[in-house]
Amino acid sequence: MPVAVPKEYRTKTAPTLKDKMEKLNMRTENTELKKMGSIAKKGLQKYLLQLQHHPLRTKAITAAVLSGISDTVSQKLSGISKLQLRRILLKMLFGFAYLGPFGHYMYMLLDKIFKGKRDSKTVAKKVVLEQLTSSPCNNLLFMIYYGVVVDGRPWMHVKTRIKQEYPKVQMTAWTVSLCFPL
Image (cartoon, rainbow, N blue to C red; front, side):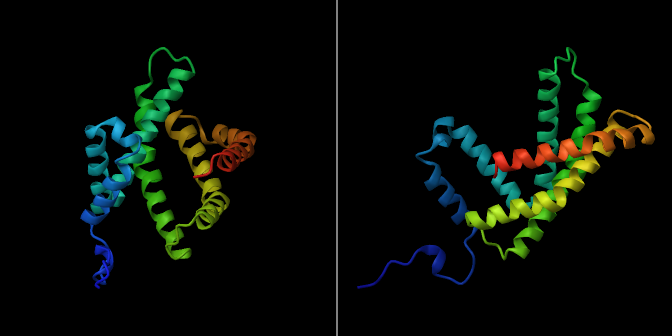
């Protein structure tokens, strides 16, 4: 009696994008995504397709959009009556030019270091390594960018502010990472 072999094990090649999309469809049929409707599902599928074919570009654009959204929300929560469009665009530029590409290459490196493992212990190790190495650099670079480029302050003022606030910023980042891990 022949044994049914799953499609992805029939050949020595990796599963195709179509196979991955079929798995995504099967996994999401009984989840919240189904409730969101077919538009959201199609949007997610298009996003995943772009991520597969153009990962660096997709991550850069995603980082830019998320940076813009987060700054818009931040401005609204702080009580600013009129949104500062220049500030939003400069933060989006930082997301597009730095955060997206840096994250892309950082996690490629982490995947190589941990040999592509994706179990929960490995994910925790990746988070710890990222938080101890790149998080301090990212926060420092952002504080410099924000002070000099976004606020337009002189370097000496930015440097003084970093000396005063950087330890608190980094400790907050580590606290948030511990409380809300990936």
